[in-house]
Length: 279
Image (tube, rainbow, N blue to C red; front, side, top):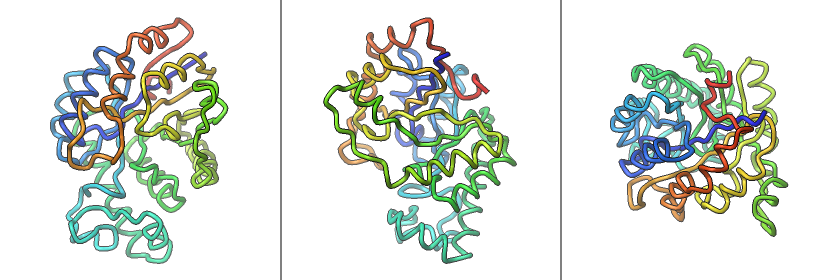
């Protein structure tokens, strides 16, 4: 069986993102969205999600480069002078290993984000993290422990088969993901030990921000058996606070609503839904 979860990350980041999520779910192949609970347009995202009961919504944990849920004064080791989560992921990872205070703040912030999601009243479909920072072993441990208290049942494990990308786009030379590959393998083991549902593969890593209509159609055309998560970053337009430089947001929205993608995803051998539909 080919099971497919098509996810939009950064739900709540901006109204443009939220509009694209709603459009791609109503008119396209999008089945799930990952909510940033403290982002500027989170309230608008929650309102839209309540109008779309078939849209599966998960928690997009923000531990880097965005807005914390707790007051920054309570997170001195995790935030910068502007009150945002730090951007220096390498140094922050080292600080988490070296400082007990940083680990306590991390646990408090993760718990606060889970609690904020619970307060929305939306069923928790899945969990992942901004920039895939949950592959860090210390962060993974905190997410697994705290998530268990909040009913977490599915977790993204960012592993992407390069051969599938080459089939989808002949001649492609996708960049390697060796920087996270060992940690992703470890995360998969720990997640399975915790009884969580994880995808067999996650598509969108090498082409993050560049999941064009042709690439998405190519991936769908060569979809293998098992559980696949295909994640994207759609928006109706760019130019909003917190956007990633160089991301083709509108093209990723177009990829999710293109007639070719809709037809390919509607093939009878493909079963689409959120993670909770396959649990």
